[in-house]
Length: 96
Image (cartoon, rainbow, N blue to C red; front, side, top):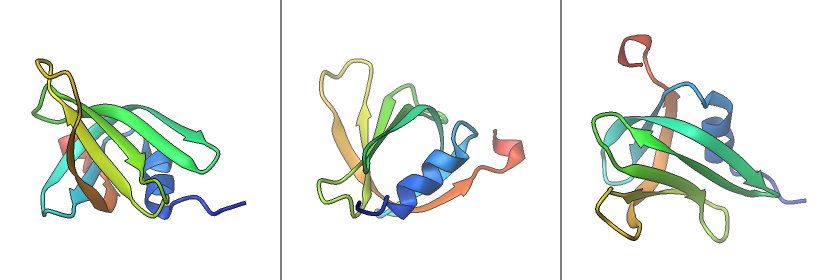
C-alpha cells in the first residue's frame, strides 16, 4: 500500500481545530475544515478561511505528492485553484 501524503496527514490530524496553511505563492491564512476524508490514499477536506465567505476544498494531486487548495465564492459555479500547501501548523489560540 502506498504511503499517505505527509501534509494531508498533518491537516487531518489537526482538524477540526483551526489550521494555519501557507501556500506556495506565499499567502498564509487560518482555515477551519468542516470535514476531512481519506479514500484509500487520496485525501480531501472542505471548509472555510478566516475573513472570507468562500468555500475551500483541499485535495491531494493525482500522484498524491502534494495537497492543493481550491476556492469557490458564493456567486461562482466552479472551483478556482488557489495554490499548493507548503506548510501546516495549528492556528494560535488567539486567532481561533
